[in-house]
Length: 176
Image 1 (cartoon, rainbow, N blue to C red):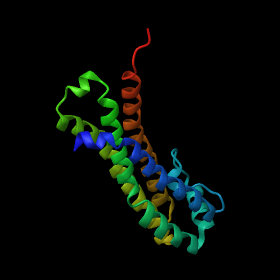
Image 2 (image 1 turned 180 degrees about the horizontal axis):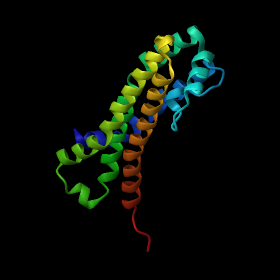
Image 3 (image 1 turned 60 degrees about the vertical axis):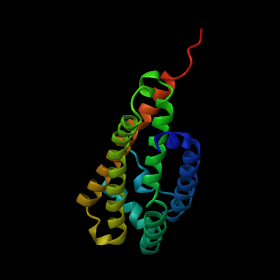
Image 4 (image 1 turned 90 degrees about the horizontal axis):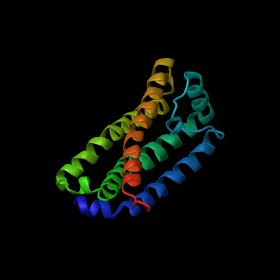
């Protein structure tokens, strides 16, 4: 399974892009051009969160909730996580020391790097979906909590991305 997963890295990257691009392009229009809360990698203030929710209105909130969080963004964290695991395995296999590890250990290494991001992304999705479904729950504390989860998600996403970059750069043939 591990070897097959690393062979599908390009297809998984394409699938991620095919889900991600429409997700951000269409849904940004609903808020009058304001970026979605879950794409603000540095987080947002409670005022910015309220401005986004207000710009969406009830109808926009329902559309985002159903078509973003319950459709596109439901499988997306898992798809991105699978893609990251695949890329870690594919780039890691270029390294002699990584290739020498048992396949199960390679997979476990990749999973340990990616799983915290996956859990944080789903937790963040639940927090933002709750704000969208119950506008009255949007108070400074719940908005700050959602913002902290978003920052955490991106910080945890950076870990496997950095490992992939290091593996890629380290696995490059040396020029003489």
